[in-house]
Every structure is written in C-alpha cells, then in structure tokens.
Length: 317
Ligand SMILES: NC(=O)c1ccc[n+]([C@@H]2O[C@H](COP(=O)([O-])OP(=O)(O)OC[C@H]3O[C@@H](n4cnc5c(N)ncnc54)[C@H](OP(=O)(O)O)[C@@H]3O)[C@@H](O)[C@H]2O)c1
Image (cartoon, rainbow, N blue to C red; front, side, top):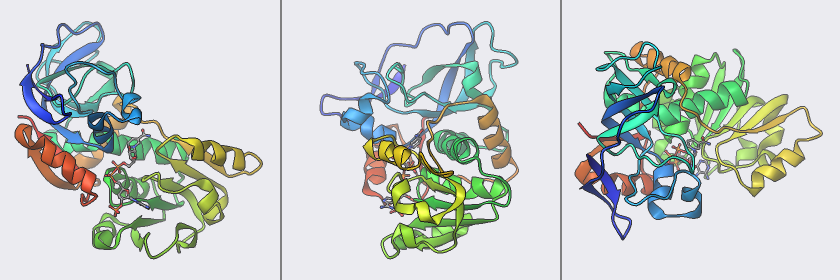
C-alpha cells in the first residue's frame, strides 16, 4: 500500500509499504481518506526520546495518528459496523503501536472508531479525533467540569486548546478564558473565549477567575504557578507527564484542589459525541492548512513553526 515513510534523514516521503494483512477479531480495516498532524508526529519524526514512548520503532516507520476513512473489511465481533461505513478515530499513543495513519489502510479495534456523519468531511473528522478527544476527556473526566463552571484554557489557539474552549462551553461552562500569543487573540475570541496574551500577562495574574478547571492544553505551566487562580476544590489538568507534574501532585496532596493528567484514548462514545457536535454545527474544527502526500513535510514544518491556528489536515484521498 501507499504510505508516507521516514527516509534515512527522517524526512517524510511517499513510498510503498507492505499491506496491513487480515484484521483480527473485533477489528476493522479502514481505507484512510484523511489524517491530521499533531505535535506527537513532530516527536516521532524527529526521533526524540519522547517520540519513542508514543509508538513502536519500526522500519519502515509510517507517522500519523489521526484518521478518517471508509471501512474496507470487518473481522468477526465488530458489532454494527459494516463495510463502506465512514468512520474516524486515532491510533494509540503507545510503544506497542506499529502503525501510522499516513497510509492507505489502518487496522483498528471496532470500539476505537465511530461513524462519521454525512455532513462531516473526512478532513474535519480526522482533525478532530485526537485533539477533540483530549479536550473532552481532559475537561469532563479529569477536570470534572460541571455546568456553570469557569474554565481557563492555557494555549487556546492550538489543536487541543481550540477544541477545549468550545467543548468547555458545550459542557456548560459559564465563562472560558483562553491564553494565546498576540497574533491569535481574534482567533481565540472567535472560538468563544476571553483571550489573554500569555506574553503580556503572567499566568498567575490571568483575569476572570477563580476557575473551576485550569486546562493547561499547552502543558506550558504548572499547578504551583496557577493554584491561586483555582476555586478551593478546582482542578489543574495538564497534557504532558514529567518531573513538574510529580512535584505538582505532591504539592496538591494536602489540598482539596486536584492535579491531573489527561492521556487520550480513542473511544467510540467520545468520538460519537464529537461527531454529533460537528454535524449540528455546535463544534468547529478550524483547519489552518491542508497538505497532501507530497507536502506532509511542509505541514510538519508549519506545525513546528508555531504559526498554526487550529489544525493541519492531510488529504490522502
Ligand atoms: N496527553 C495527551 O493525551 C495529549 C493528547 C494530545 C496532545 N497532547 C500534547 O498537548 C500539547 C498541545 O497539543 P496541541 O495539539 O494543542 O499543539 P499545538 O496545536 O501545536 O498548539 C500548541 C499551543 O501551545 C501554545 N503555547 C505555546 N507556548 C505557550 C506558553 N508559554 N503559554 C501558553 N500557551 C503556549 C500555543 O499558543 P500560540 O500559538 O498562540 O503561541 C498553541 O496554542 C502538546 O504537547 C501535545 O503533545 C497530549
């Protein structure tokens, strides 16, 4: 099958790789129509240590996590999924994952995909899978956001943040404040947040609190730095593990405030919720740029530049 593979210089180039083979029970084969790029792809492509925790080291190595496409084959035990159904999802951030979504096919568990509504395009679905799920699982499950809550999203202009601002509203947040760089203030305001330039206002001085949830989508802060902005039983949720998180967890031990890490999972119910919001126009996935097989390297360079507002989609149709 066709795929994007990393050449010896770790440049992503189109090539041919072996077909995926038969799907085991409970799995479907998806013909990928679109994918999307994430910071995780930058880590995998660069060969960094953190990238080695996100997927297996294979040769050839096909990058990509998000996908949207059409079911090409079903094994036994996939419930109501059928050949030709449009579905989307994302591959796991796991050292056991040997696949990349920048390929003609992926083989995935049936409960890790959800149908894509007719009104939702493959690029939009793919670009929603990881970051929409991260925002939903981070705010609802880790942050335990309740209707009427107040939310601060740190890094509101990125993939996770742009979904988090909107999903906080959809979960009933009364107010959402979003930090970003100066050039992206209008973009963040358009998503439904009160924008704050993080270069001008230190996080600890962000107006609009106290917050029930501080969602550090950019993983650029710490609980220690912003705990005074939280309500007495508020939650600080981050997207990256590390030594700082351990310190945060210890710091919060004697407090009613909580510190949590979201580790995204591709779950049918959450993907279906995201698809429903997209189909009814309640959730928007801002696509900054679409690249194709030949221009994936340019998409990764744009993502690395920090200029992106929202997501970069990859058209593989
Ligand atoms: N734990 C998980 O399961 C999981 C899942 C998905 C993603 N992630 C991680 O979450 C992080 C964000 O992902 P993403 O897709 O949103 O990345 P992205 O699209 O590249 O966005 C990065 C965001 O970080 C903001 N930012 C950069 N420096 C900042 C600072 N000092 N203070 C506040 N904001 C700052 C950027 O704002 P400006 O552009 O306005 O400067 C931008 O909004 C990545 O590290 C990714 O690996 C984790």
